[in-house]
Image 1 (cartoon, rainbow, N blue to C red):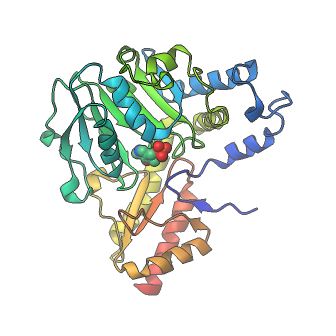
Image 2: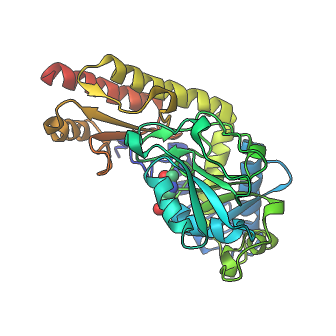
Length: 360
Ligand SMILES: *Cc1c(COP(=O)(O)O)cnc(C)c1O
């Protein structure tokens, strides 16, 4: 068996010990005689898996008691609609900060349910930075302010929590959730699909301040109404049971690694290794402004794009896979989520150095 270093943006690499444990428990989960996939979601075995995953998530993020953690489905793209349905709360409009492809998708979807005010955009920079906080035209009457805390495609990340007064801050954290500690109390709502930095596709995490629930638009499907989902402890419909089980194993793994502060240190070391190399090179480059470079998704370019294919082919031969950049940005992209070890980034930098020596 050969495991490669998988730099996919998502679905992405999972920690190997988690996959091994899941393999060990595949046919018979802890003496139950069945696989987790075959369990009733209302049976005591799965209820314990669910409760444990919930408790670990709350512990890792130190989620305050007045926040609900919901295990939903539909991914962040569905949540882009579910958020306005639940969060407009009778208000006329919501503020959105446009920082790239994913916030643009959130804006487009929200506009189907209410009036969207794009309070700031970094489009003019080709989405290589965040719009300076002083330039945001926030509406104090807005239902909420929406940000994408890490733009997976552009590789732009907030390294601060924007102050937005009393208006609830909503963040799509799909591609960075659990990569670093977050002060949850500064947010009204945090959401993210699991398949970037948590577990298998199919599970969406929602963390929402309790007082913001219970005001969904009448057209909201019951399964997408935060108050209904919360009242049923995320079991209003059959939850994605296997995805929740794997997420629970990842949460335990994160705790065993020392928690989110320790993960953040490791993620910073990984990102520094790669960005330092890019900045020192005259052959490879990063186009993202230093102050907002993503620790999770690192797009980079060769000076001569006609060499991209040769670079990617050589990478593949060395077990460094899924490095092709998103078509919108071009070039390459290395996604270096929690499960990517430092050795993987080192192997990538070694290959970049070798390639530069050959072609530079
Ligand atoms: C991947 C991603 C999405 C889309 O997630 P789906 O699970 O496909 O719905 C949305 N936002 C961000 C920031 C992402 O990284």
